[in-house]
Length: 137
Image (tube, rainbow, N blue to C red; front, side, top):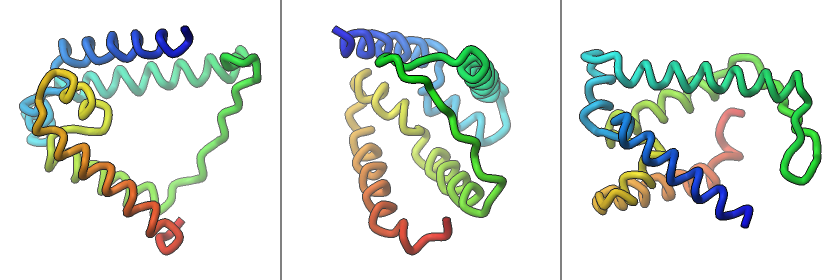
């Protein structure tokens, strides 16, 4: 029954992102061309929501589904790895027009060509797993 809740929330989230045109390749293209504020507005709302949620978790000592306290570790200070990761993520997002979440939404909406992007994302994750010990951390 708990799994069903997550599936329902996932469906609702997918519908919201689709209706907000956050998974639209054209909206993503406009964002990277600085032609529209639409996607920047969505990203800003996500950041603000995340900040509020994290602060709420920390201050109210929220517990997880099993009753254990949720502890959120502080991130390390700014580092080269965050810059490299962010640049690679942004380049991939700009080249294919989708970040990881919308890949599944687009597949669910019937855009089967996005399956190639999913295969590329999985391959990139596998490649990182092989090379992570040799990369700067």
